[in-house]
Image (cartoon, rainbow, N blue to C red):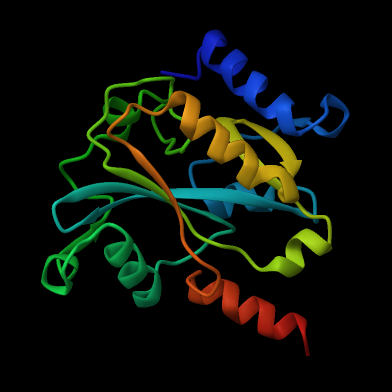
Length: 200
């Protein structure tokens, strides 16, 4: 199912608390099924938000990041520590586990995975985890593209994104779903490589 009008209105209400309407831009593009495909359709200074399903030990998680990230050991260990999992438990993990049907689990359009779940949607998720991004990106006044459907993105200032996501999680997630922001330095290896290259 696509994002319903009431779901969009809820998201817009949260976004508008932190981002004036003049800084919210809707981009309609060709349908895309992956973050990499979406990134190719975005303006140069806009970075896609990518979200994956991750089974970490006994817990079902969403892991979200800015850009087409890959999940590394440092991030997995940081998530396990924050969630109180032992190393043994955390050694059993899988991306996009077969038992999870995202359309049913998240109440979103087939092909979409997003931390902007329908309000109070009944899900087995234990937590939504946001990876940190390079601080340089905010100083460069980049934007982040939040998918509303397979062919629509809402582009927002990256500097406001974390406030929006935290507020959305507080208002929309069921009580059993936690929101975690990993500390700086626990981002993906791809972030670290890009940041290092930008300093050369």
